Image 1 (spheres, one colour):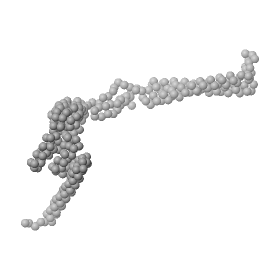
Image 2 (cartoon, rainbow, N blue to C red):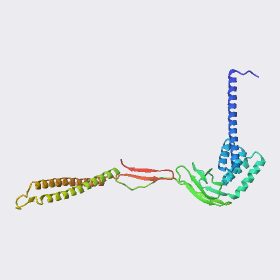
Image 3 (cartoon, rainbow, N blue to C red):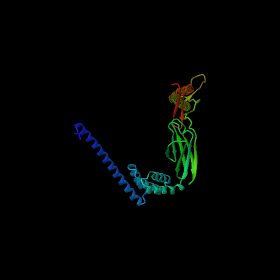
Amino acid sequence: MPALTGVGKHRVMIRASVLLLAMTATAFADGDSSKLFEEGRALAKDGKWDDACDRFAASFELDHAIGTELNLADCHEHLGHLAQAWRLFDEAARTAETAERGKFARARADELLPQLATIVVKVATPGAPGLALSIAGRISRPAAEVHEVVDPGDVQVEASAPNMHKVAKSARAQAGETVVVEIPALAEDKPVIVSGRTERRPTRVVAAYTLGGIGAASFVTGVLLGYVAKRKYDDAIAGNCEMPDPDRPRACNPEGYRGTNSAIMVANVGTVVGTVGVAMVAAAAVVYFTAPRDVVVTPTASTQSAGLAVVGRF
C-alpha cells in the first residue's frame, strides 16, 4: 500500500470528520424522534389525543418510521380525522417493510373507507400555468381527473392561477358516496373599473363650503346687528329727541345724541359685516361651480387584487 502524502492524509481526515458529523447528526435526530414517539405513546395511553398527535407528527417529520406513521394514523382516527387517518394507513400499507405490517395497515384503511366519501374533480385546463388545486383544504396535484378521499359533509374545491379568475365550488358528500365536481377553464382576470363618473376636486369643494359657511354666518350677523341698531335708535330718541318742524333736524338732548350716534355706529358695522357675508357667499358659489371635474378616483377590484384607479389630468 503506498504511503499517504501530506495532502492525502489531509483529505482522509476531512472525509472522516464529515462522516462523523453526519453520523452524530443522525444519532441526534433518531434520539429526538424516539423521545417524541415515546411521549406520544404515553399521551395516547392517557387519552390526550391532540397532544399525542403533535408528538407523533413531530417524530414522523424527523424519521419516517412505519411504526410512527401507524400510531399517527390511529391518533387521527381517534380525533375523527378519518380521511387523514385513511391516507396514513394507505401509505403505510404500500410502503411497509414487512408483509405483516402492510397487511395490518391495509386492514385498518379498509375499515375506514366505507365511512368516507370520494371527490372526483374534473379539471378542464389542468395544464394552465401556475394552476393550484385545493380539495377540502388540501393541496392536490392538478390533473384532468383528480380522485380524493374526504370526510363526509360539505367539501370545498378551489382552483386558481396567476391573473385568472379563481373558481370555487362546494359539494356535499355522504359516506360511501362518490361526488363529481367539474372545474371549467379559468377565465382571464381583468380589473373592474367604473368609468364615465366625474367629481369636483375635493379641495375646491371644501374651500367653497368653508367660504359659504363663513359668508352665511357673516350675513346673518349683519342682519342681527341692523336689528340691534334699530332698537337702540328707537330707544335713544324716545323721550330724548323731538322734531318740532319736519323741515328742520331732530333736536335731541345730550343723552339722545349719544344713543343715536351709538345706534348709527352699530348699524354701520352691521352693514359692513352683512356686505362681506354676501360677497363671501358669492365667492363660494364661484369656487364651487368652477371646480375642475377632470379627476376621477374609483375603486377597482379583481379576484387577485383591489385598489384605486386614478384617471384624469393633474
